[in-house]
Length: 234
Image 1 (spheres, rainbow, N blue to C red):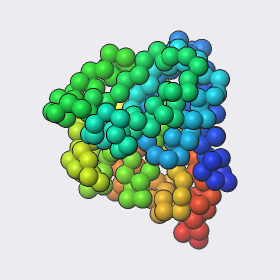
Image 2 (image 1 turned 60 degrees about the vertical axis):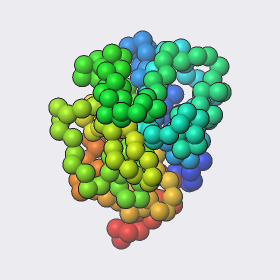
Image 3 (image 1 turned 45 degrees about the vertical axis):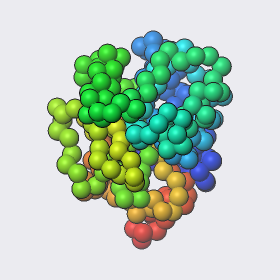
Image 4 (image 1 turned 180 degrees about the vertical axis):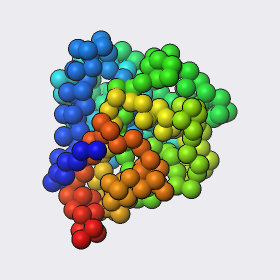
């Protein structure tokens, strides 16, 4: 895993947008399309606002969700609500495909299986995404893969439904599909993430983030998270 420690959250958002835009152009040149999965959070939403104005071949982009809360359409808890406001409403051209997680379905296990079928239809069997953007929780979770829960097997489902976490059930991609992606970009900001970031750097498999594949991964962190983590090592 390579690292870039940037001045602040805004710099992280700007750099992440640049990295994703470049990856999109490369993927379209090589394979004719770009398969991107994004996570939620204030810095990723700022990243998406910047991405909307980058040079991206949007008509060749398929956009997936890393995870989503089970909440009504348009609810502030939904990552899709912020994704729409930050990116989709600002695009100069329509995406090739927006693949939102179907969390309005009453049976979330069935919804997870349906989204896995969508992934396989669009990204192959097993599915391979071009880039997955991940965040990091202060407890070491990433996507909606939570500490203390068993890690899915390498041949396990690509999408699962979780129990209650912070008041909501969720759908989430699992490590097998995240690890198969061609590239992983971590976006981590804030001093509250410093301890978890240090565990991620060490590859601490006791937390979900520490179990994510490190090859072809780029960590973009702000000074508050990155320098605090470095100080903790000193």
